[in-house]
Length: 381
Image (tube, rainbow, N blue to C red; front, side, top):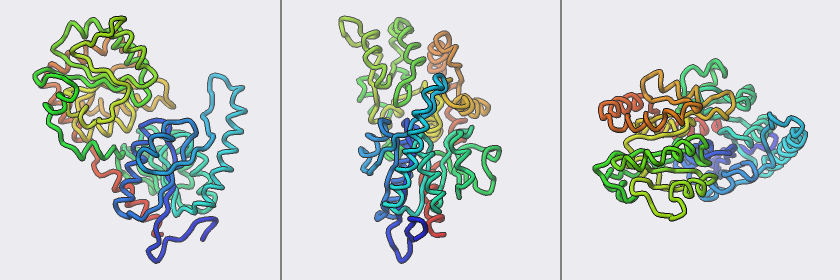
């Protein structure tokens, strides 16, 4: 045992901490990695460490794993005086992380990004436990750049990451996606029927991420009369939980009557059906979502969020646009351009085919399994 680390020898069950979260873009890959570890070693003990009050505290238990929350929070860049409380939370989180590690005795700690991964991975490395980072974006985040100094391996999804990390630590794996997206194969007709839509009409899937995207939702709300006037185009609209009531009120009005070509929900549980139904997707440019579009060969219009660190979503989007694998609409121009571009594109079969073919070339399959292999290599050492 080294500083709380228990040796995995003589066939003992491997013990793995996976830390991070905050959004579906961090949580879904984390769960996929855990599932891939379990596929290889069903006896593996896996503990998640997340942030109190964030969505991983619900999603991870739903996936069948135990999670402990840290009182961690991000820095408030607009109200600097509030950051004294943040510093206290970081210190408390590091103390809690040390206690968790001493009690759980992991063989390795895996960081997937998000607030909790900082104190957890930093503490694990200080205690002599090997750490592995999974960087999902084309532009590395501040936390991962700091953690990379002590990390043993860094799994990435984009080329050229040597400008952020030591080249000898980098492994090109791609981003893990939700396994159920690839497990089921619904026909387009079957998928459309589940949304009460007609198979002969074009369908646009609108994704605002797990929490919702203000610009995308506002753009569709303002364009609702245009959408009603084009009944030959169907919309599956995931609003996110924050915006669902506002959207329903705007779209349905006081009468509450449905619109035949619009399906509205706050969260889509059966994303495999939603993707199968869609001819075109409108989405933010989170790394996890982009990986799903690549693997499923989905034509997409990307509207990067401007409210993320280092504007990494724009960099994610341009990595596709530069290879003719996606259409890019700036957030500031969405209300003017998004719906006209989407409607024009979804009617253009040649354009849809071209986008599908180009984005398929960027797919990196089996990412979760490859990362799990790297986990076991480090445990073996």
